[in-house]
Image (tube, rainbow, N blue to C red; front, side):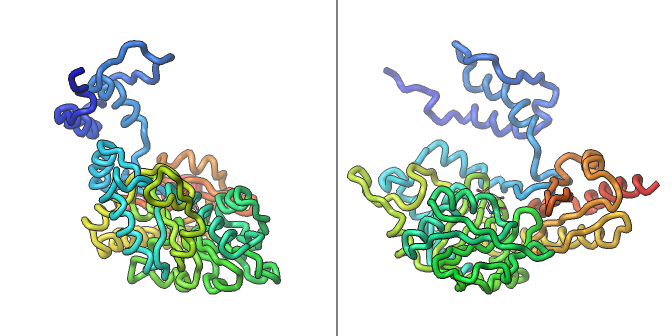
Length: 408
Ligand SMILES: Cc1ncc(COP(=O)(O)O)c(C=O)c1O
């Protein structure tokens, strides 16, 4: 049988795919939506791309838009789009060194670069911080024999989920008014506990007192959101104490501007942790470390980003996001009709109109400008400064317009 061109490099088809990234190229086209059933006859690749563009690309929220600041999801730099294309073409499996010799080295290299910023000596990539948290609790249970997980009521649901999966009791500690874990509410005996501290809580971006590291048999820091601040000379102190943890989770698909799914779990003693969570098998040339079996080369995207920007370029983008957050907070704090939730110091801005319906207020804002957060039973609005291209003056003007209109 002759070679199947669907598996070959089709420069024209791929060029068409790139052209379609420009929204003007399909803005006049109809949207076909989804066929009711699996078609018997295929359209061919280029036709399929053209059919899909108005829906896949046209019905998406663009995270680099000027007013996109609602979620912990950043836009991605174009160099990651290019590497994603290369990765898909190769479909490497990092489980097998033979299929992915360089990609395995690349992942090890970026973990080696990043772990010291958190006082850790290694680790591995995971598809997200939910899996990173799960992996850390698994290591804590098998290495230190912990029996329970202690975390604040503001910790991410993945911590509870992970405790359930690894069969550990879950004990909830209280928080103060800023939503940081209140050490006075910790159980008196933590000798059989894994204490999970959060650096950048999901709702308000609060950082737990990291000086609680060492109180328990194992301390894990869930730095899914705020971890990348460790790369900034200006903001590193926000994570002061992180180096005393036993393990740290960081989502690269948040403030390291990576496409999903990309995160890291890092350990203070990686050799011990990895040997505890590794399985060998007759068909494996290298042990399978961690939760995932087959997994792809997400590390090459992060490597490309770090090579392209360097630490300073990455830090500059995070610092710009932090400056935007400060500007928005200052505006809200000084607005007579808006109430600002105490700043967590990690670029999450939580506020509410003083005397109007949150739902109405949010509905009047441009879509993608704010999400909602439930805090102690009350609904607040939340902006997350994850978008370096956010037009903060436009965002302020939009909020001001609505707040002003409500005042009239
Ligand atoms: C503090 C925190 N931890 C963990 C997670 C889960 O991370 P992921 O969505 O990467 O699995 C999130 C997600 O928003 C988070 O905010």
